[in-house]
Image 1: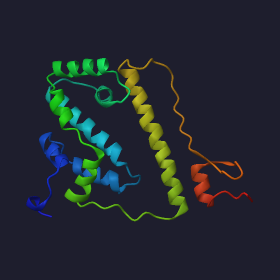
Image 2: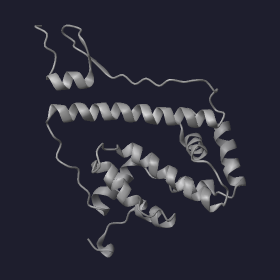
Image 3: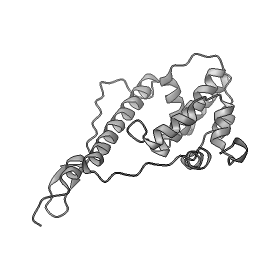
Image 4: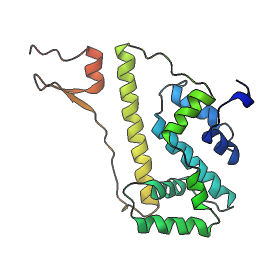
Length: 200
């Protein structure tokens, strides 16, 4: 598809505006799972928006650690953040020369990411395999990703002083319980064996 015939895309415009070279390809590879595990559209939207915030901060010529960018994004967008904390973070970023209102208006939704991938880049998801082992591995990778994202978030909150500094352990354990016999399975185990083997 030629550039002139491509549909309008906020994501494409923001990529160009913030010089996020390679971001489109990264989004497509992550969404289609070209190199393994697929990333959800909501996670991709968060990753994209953090990259936008990071680019805006870098333009201010202030050196900010990646964990601080993650913490700032969480403060600006988190549902459990007080308005006072959000206002303090906005003022802090504005004092660094970041136009917070403009940056937030350039944040995108997961629907915008989906439209960009499917209509602008014409990306398609691969056929979903029915192989139980692959399904089980997918569940286990998702569990590992959830643990990694949680660990990163906790570390960022500790680093920013928004969470008390302790030796935190993250445990992610997805279990499935048979409604007939009550047997408890790890999700991957249940998928691999093709269901519960109870006599109920």
